[in-house]
Length: 142
Image 1 (cartoon, rainbow, N blue to C red):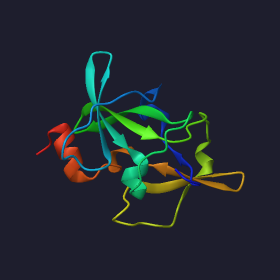
Image 2: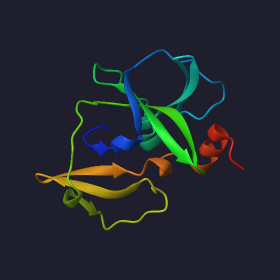
Image 3: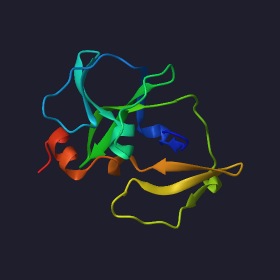
């Protein structure tokens, strides 16, 4: 997103697909792009740049929808996340993952970072990316 790089653990990625058409949801938060049909299933789609930076994603050749596995209370839910500039899959060693030294309640999804050849990559804690009220709405949590 913009000049920052983020990583998502591969075990939580169900699939990466091209940007597809989705149906808007009236009166939903700006970062909820809508619903998409995927292999007969209806999935919500979240605009990650909008959620993080309050701006709509930039549609470009490298913009993708990452189908994410959200594991909540022992149930797995699939959700589409729009990401920009998705260009590669990279394997990192555990020794490359470091504590950031930061702990902000208002950005709970940023925990550890990956230090790679002098570059810092934010490692997202996927279950903490969505605001609690959105998780409750999407996954019918009480």
